[in-house]
Length: 253
Image (tube, rainbow, N blue to C red; front, side, top):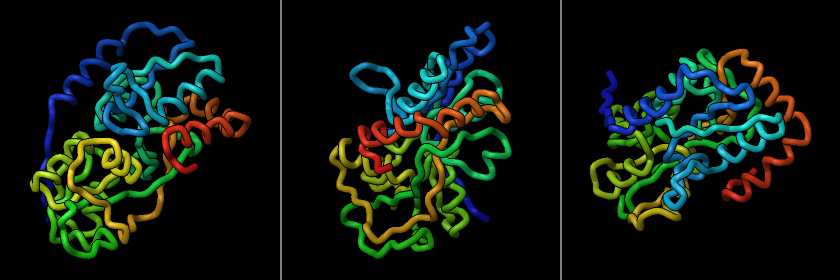
C-alpha cells in the first residue's frame, strides 16, 4: 500500500477566504472571475514587486477574454483549491499550470490546448545515480505538488514515499536541505525556479524522461458557454497571439 505524507499550509485557508468573500455577490456579466495559483512561475504567480498575479496563463486568459469583450478579474487561489472553487461558483475560469487529465475531465471542462509539457525531475547536485524515468525513483523520498497529476504518476510508477507540498518552491527548499531525495513536477516551473530563484545546489538530470507531454488548457465548468467562446477564438486569429506570450515567458511553443 502506498504511503502519502502531506504538508498542508495556511495558504489553502487564506486562498479559500479570498475567493469565498466574492462567492455569492451579484457579478457584472462582462466580468469573468479567473482563479490562478500564486506559485506556478512562469505560468501563474504573484509578482513580488507589484504583488499582482502574472505569468503566461494569466496573460493568455486576459488576451482571450479581452477579444471576447470581457474583463478578467484575477483571484489568488491555492492550486489544490482551484477545481473546488470553480465547481462551487467562486470563480468562473482557471488559468494555471493545471494539465488536462481524464480524472479532471470528469469534473470540469477544458478549452482547446494552449501549451503542453511533461514532468521534470530535480535532485541535489551531489546526488549520484542514473535517473532515466520514474521507476528509478522507487527507493527515494520524492516530493510532488498536492493536487497535481504528478502525485498519481509517482504512485503509478511504484514510488511509495511521496511527500506532497502546496508549492514547488517549498518542495525544492526541502530538497536542498535534504528532507527529501528528489522533486518531481512541472518541468517548465522547476526549470524557471532553478534559473531565477535561490542558488540551491540542485540539478535536473538530463537523462530523465517523464511520461508523455500533457495538454495545458483554460478550465471552466462543464458545458459552460464561455469555454465554447474561448475555443472559437482559439480556432481563429487569437491562436497566433499565444506564441508571443509563450516566447515572452521563455516557453517554447
